[in-house]
Image 1: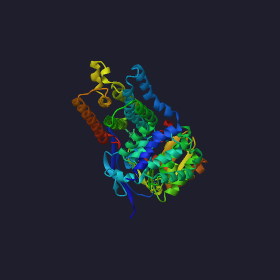
Image 2: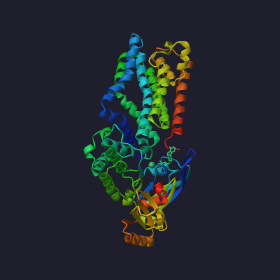
Image 3: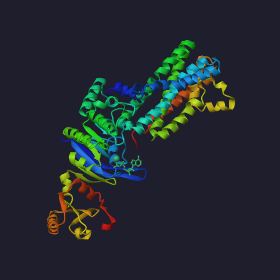
Image 4: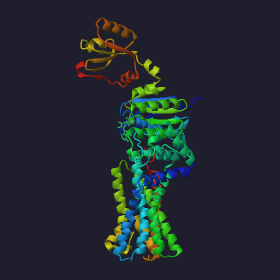
Length: 305
Length: 246
Ligand SMILES: Nc1ncnc2c1ncn2[C@@H]1O[C@H](COP(=O)(O)OP(=O)(O)O)[C@@H](O)[C@H]1O
Ligand SMILES: [Mg+2]
């Protein structure tokens, strides 16, 4: 039987301020689940609750049938968490940092030493492994923390915005590692980079103001919206009004308009633009488009309103 | 219960061994406070308070451990979010704190080595008082580290932590007569000293040294206060700490 992570009506209020509103979902404990949402949407709060750092105000969750509220100690044996604001401890070196964390995880000294060396190799941090963290760049320190969490061997990983501060190449390297891991692990990650979610995720959740507004594979999310194509036009001759009847206009800055359309209107519009010699580009809908659609955030300049 | 030793060792490495290895000057700074006060008291008293001051310096180092612990824990918790990573690991609050407390002792090993050598040279008392003094020191250590932990779980940034540490320092080491007998404090102010739990510990130690003659009833009261306070703080620290946030 497939093991699950199941969230049941989780709500959280800080004082009077609601941060999570009735979050429920159920996912297999396998692959990557990417949670996307704007700042303050509640992603970190959900990760903190699921990783037993924070108690929910109401509701509960089970990870592989173990209840996170009643039995946190049991969950902690099988998870590892990278907190969003975690930083490498200033006065330690990367090698020391990874080693002590593995000791805290309950590994014996020899095993911890071995795993430390192993992960230093995998993440190519050998060159910096013995320099105190305070002298290393932000990106390297972030990498050390990710390496540290992965080196635990935990099959369930919570990574809260893991790639913030990584350069594009380091990010790709991490994706490569995560893609390999996801065959045998469950990785719950939050991100602002929609291409990261597209590159890695088996399932994607969209969070908006404490609510899980969508969850599913990219294909499933695509199906849940009525538009299949995204069209960009940059043209001062076109008015917003004349486009509105074809689909949904989501962006409009500097005469550059983006609208989402279905198959039929995509054909119609393409023909019209070609006839009028208007330059345009057309693409299948991306995660970014889906994200804007479901979080109801439109970027429109006033002149277009 | 996987590998308690590893977890304690980890704490000792983080705040004591690695810190001193990577920044050797820390060893010198760890010696500064106890010795500057010790030398000061010995000079002012022209050597008369030598034994009290040596024992006082050890006691004060034990008590300061709790204050430093509070700062170290807040630092790791608030600035590096390391405590988060540990809360979500198979390490319990108790093991983490126990390890961190031990690490404060390890950090002070150079201090203890010198002070204990001095004590062996200059303080000559029989076995029972020695054991009494050791017991008092252990109690004070347990008390101050529980208090330090409890407070650290409530601090959300370093400014708060430094404020707490200032208050604790005054309460635990400034108003209590650790390096000299309480009779040196003029009377109305002496009562202020009794607000500090450390005073009771210092009195018991000084009584054991023979430099203070407490009536048996006072001695018993002192023990009761010390044990009761330690137990209360320990229970509160276990029950009310914000290890897992609410
Ligand atoms: N400790 C806290 N106390 C009060 N409010 C908080 C706390 N942590 C988060 N919040 C609030 O809860 C909401 C969700 O925050 P968070 O989970 O950090 O969002 P995200 O990770 O998606 O950016 C925000 O409005 C934030 O201000
Ligand atoms: Mg966040």
